Length: 307
Image (tube, rainbow, N blue to C red; front, side, top):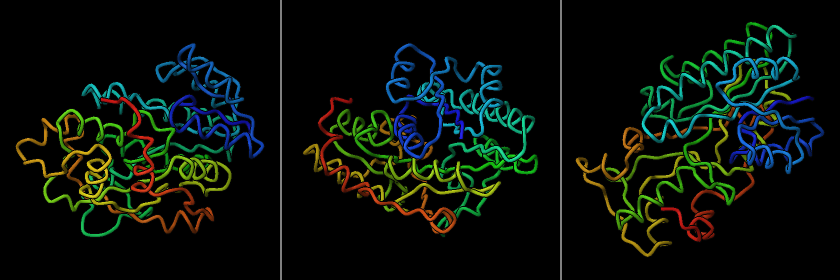
């Protein structure tokens, strides 16, 4: 299969490209800079220069592919507080590539990253969120729902919901690093409330296997959960950070949550317990790499100088 990958030089892309090549696929990766292009080429993929704002380029690349894996997101905009701009860019990219795939032939595959936090942010409480649950069509959830709707136009579309904590020694800028940096900056590892709310997690290499399998075999209109740990209490995460940094772990008072957690403040208190049962069944997949706390205690996150 000829596969076009956005976000090809990033955390997930740098693991997905070898996964796809090992399975016999031909891969072209989007690169927006010279350094990204060099990284994609070093992984063994062809390079296409461009970015998410180059809609004509995205349309052409998707039309020439048998399948697309969309991983790119404007994380810089999110981190600086312009989340709506990042969401809008993502929406336009998915719409553009989806149209190209639909117009260039039926049965082409389109797999894109989404997130399990959409379910909690959409009001799901009291039980584990499943792959069958649909978040209200606002903000980023609208993009996921638009992706799934492409199935009605002959595109074999699938949304891979990533947990907020995708971890491994390949992770340089994800939320695990952010939480560690916040603990260093504040002198303690904090958790919201009593710390019993849960976030799912997944190892990078388990996640990219879900993307590959989704590209190859997921039925049109599938939602999938690339999670290993289905819900880790925030207090346990803070305690792992604390013991590895030799800092205390303690609750962050409600009035101090925005100052401590910064851009994570709107999400840090969400309870995001999820299930991965349908993904296991549909793809014949199971996580095989270390769970979050084991991976954190391996030490690689704490050997860095991230602040």
